[in-house]
Image (tube, rainbow, N blue to C red; front, top):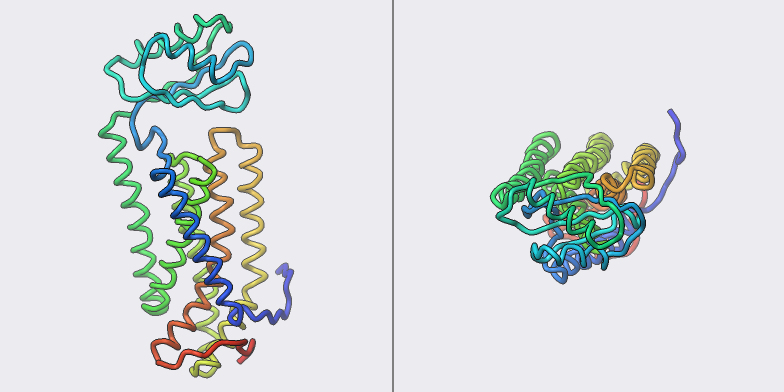
Amino acid sequence: MLQIFVNTNYDFVGKRRWFYAASLGAMIISIASIVLHGGLNYGIDFTGGTLIQVRYEKAVTVDHVRRGLDRIQLGTAVIQQFGDPQEYLIRLPQSDRKSDELTKSVQGALSSTGDGAVEIRRVEFVGPQVGRDLQLQALYAVLAGMGGILVYVAIRFDYRGGVVSVLALAHDVVVTLGALSLTGREISLPVLAALLTIVGYSINDTIVVFDRIRETRGRGTRRGPGLAGLINTAINQTLSRTLLTSFTTFLSAFVLFLFGGEVLRDFAFALVIGVVTGTYSSVAAAALILDWENWSRGKAPAGGKVPAKA
């Protein structure tokens, strides 16, 4: 089997305070961004309304598009360039007009500005009730996934490992949502699929590390310093597998982000961020087990470097 790290002896547990600080900082920034932006930027899948993708014969600006829409007074529209200056996505609020009538009105208004013929490439309509239902279903899907993982890990390993795993997953989801918020990207159904993929991918890495801790702990001491060494050993032994798997997944998602087109770009962006945070959180989650166990025994170490091997 291909390995890039052989017989490594990195002191991950000794640097766990840095991991905690980085995770806390990333989560604070993510939550602050979501709050300051007034919540997540939900797409039409979750908010309801009409999405129309149009293409002009020649390049135009957002002002040209908005000037055309002002002729039919459909309310506040969100206009976004889609790939190149000839193509735009238009998101319109709920309207009493029928879908066909609305589409013809938009096409006629945009064509009347003298910027050439306008082609309607895509029309999507989502009612307000459907959008609210999808928001709830998305929340239930993520919570159900985390709940199932908690039960599985608690039975397969122990309750402490299950809780730590779910905390790591929550960290990955929050940081990914924060990255989407910071970059102004939408939360759509493909992005929801990416979040659920991240949950599954992250727990896979975490379980590999936890399983190696269980195996090595069965042959080692159960005392606090010994556990620190066992965790370091487990992380180092799985490091090559973790990085190789993560890198290949990251590379695939990054290529999709670059060349997959605008429709898949938000999905791929979420995967890229999730793969990085999922790999990182697997190491931090393993270190968190040590502090929890030391705390539960009432003898947490005063600090400093812990031995890298049992």
